[in-house]
Length: 489
Image 1 (tube, rainbow, N blue to C red):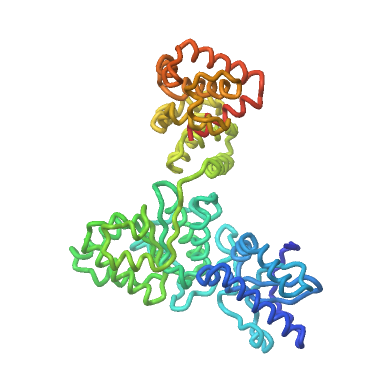
Image 2 (cartoon, rainbow, N blue to C red; image 1 turned 90 degrees about the vertical axis):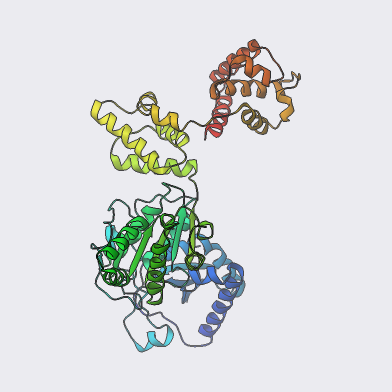
């Protein structure tokens, strides 16, 4: 797609009357129909329905979207397909340009061609973030605030700008941005985020809340499910349940974190269900997080699980090595302390289950370096974090090593224990012995027995030979290190 200097258009769309305009509009209608058939009704309504046709300038057609976020998402996910479909419908179109269109002042021409809607605005949000609708969603009163009488304060560190996006969390991030831009959008209410501990659910919820409060006309209440329960019980004891209900049901956006805590709390579930229904019926936004999807929260009432699953459900997968490394790089840069790349890679390989622990490990390293006045090195990392790293050690088995090495060098698994001495087989077998020595706690005789009842001296020779070859051949050393990382991750 052609990309020109990004300019936000505030003037009315220039639609020249005549047959050319009619043909262009007909072609666009056919393109939209093709897109809807290809991506499905739900995806089309979510990402593509808000595209507005602009002018055709020589061989380039312009399409407008209401926010930068939506424009960037459509450009990345559907840009190439849009260009292909346009070229099939109109040979004059060689390029498709996606631009942001601001709200237009009322005019007869604008009202005729494209009515201006509140969603077609894009003011600056907190920290210069873009793409937030400044007008209150329908049914939402103005008066931006965090409900301090009920809500937990939002953490200012948890913003969209500080959230590192990767494959495991990109869909949840996109859904969160969509809700922050336009609460109570069809198909996105409620928004249900789920995933394991420390993967970013709470970060996204705080980011949504901060973005909405920054607009100045939306009231937000964020709390854990545990706090919701305690507040409800306290209101019963104080005989103030009506006040509790009115406070919660008067907010524009209600966010409940760790909903799984309500499992087994039947009375609290009942109250949450009625609060949920009251807010949805009033056109207010609900955002919920849990460690499992609604269908897997078997301890919740069926009617509540059904309602939770009727909106947008987005999961956050376990982190990949690339995402963990990106998070560490961003945190290290923000700290202002130099952390060598090899240290960041080492941590990303060693701590794989929890982003919070990953960040905690980095903070500990940086604090140690600052307090003792020494630079961060791989050796100091292993010493400072030895207790944490020991807890994250994964037990690698000889069977895993043999299978992974056999796959890497494309030999049969049975060759690991066979008597064949051809180099194409013997070298991978020696590498597997070397890795077994370094990655397992097995003794040399035990390792030898797993490789066809070989003597422990054979294993010693294999370890020495592989070490020697790694020093002589960088490419070979890289292959062995790659296998080691794959087995440790």
